[in-house]
Image (cartoon, rainbow, N blue to C red; front, top):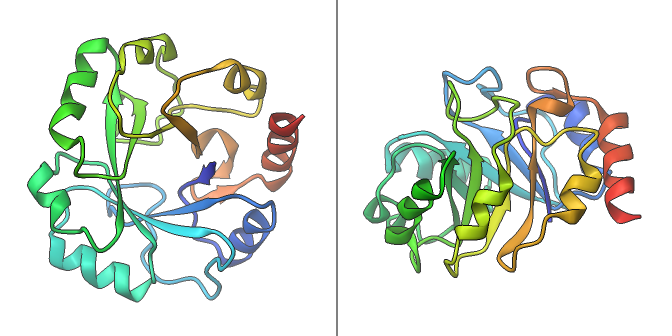
Length: 199
């Protein structure tokens, strides 16, 4: 499963969607450089839409999810399991910033509540830092919730991704390392990367 996050330009959305990705992420956190403040003319129809939120009110999340016809909600802040449960109408991804095996303990209260985890790099921002964490840390993840691997995956990482093996890893999340500028993806780089993944 391939998720491309941080989209907002209509033409770029169409081009990236045409690559056959599975999930497209839209960031609704105003402090992000990839914040989507108004709905683009064309939203993807062949891939699922994921809305990324950071400690937003559930009322706001619901309003945006309905307006954008989101398929999934990604929680990238300090949202509690109780908060996540209130959004059960959608598939929910809970993101965690990982540096050590101790950080994986934070996932346990969310087991059986959210549908997926996303493991990102601990950095200055809550996401989009463009840096990897040590994926070997995930050898210590023994939960049952499937996860997406995120954090600084770039154009030269196809072989690295192919070698990564964990029974609960269902896909990857791509963002800042494939950008021309914040929110604008380099379609050629994405295309080459996806082709290498499938070789």
